[in-house]
Image (cartoon, rainbow, N blue to C red):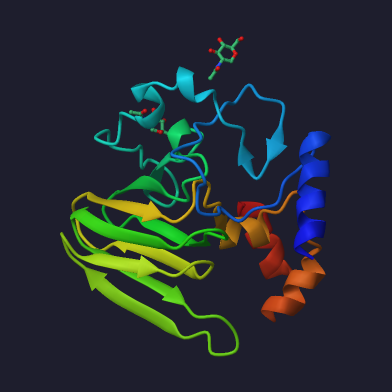
Length: 216
Ligand SMILES: *[C@@H]1O[C@H](CO)[C@@H](O)[C@H](O)[C@H]1NC(C)=O
Ligand SMILES: *[C@@H]1O[C@H](CO)[C@@H](O)[C@H](O)[C@H]1NC(C)=O
């Protein structure tokens, strides 16, 4: 079994196709992403360590407020491996989230990361829902300095419950956490999911589904 895996990996690497790994514990100090490499693996190929600079481990800009002029009133500024190449293979990343008064970071999930969030400014109502069959809703109001964790894969949200702006910083346990916003994925799929499927799933009339699909 182990031999087969090694053989597969060697073959995969030899032919420059893929290698399998789930952000394993790094076997070297770092692997700064080399976006120019044509080698495809689970992450990005490493830059030559001798050419690595301090800039590769650096990102500047999380002091800048995100533009929340949108329908939900929130903005996520990401610092993933794409923005900070030194994060490649390290299994961690960071975001800044800005909320307009009563702005919402709508229900979404990160398929590859647990998220730990702290409030820097304002108050947030946050929550997540456990998986089937319980679908238990776990919610709390957070104030400045409070910390909350959203377990990997679970649907969660944050809402600013104040008349001023709110700001949060969150760390995520992947260099590329992924995000699936529920409303957009379900009602804004491209091409659309057939409306009779959604009508049955949501137990509503097809016209309700058509209305929702028109919005996303
Ligand atoms: C990628 O290639 C471009 C063009 O050759 C070069 O300017 C750039 O510095 C390279 N990036 C890295 C990270 O090596
Ligand atoms: C914020 O986004 C809105 C909508 O896209 C745009 O009209 C506006 O110019 C942006 N504001 C800034 C300061 O970039």
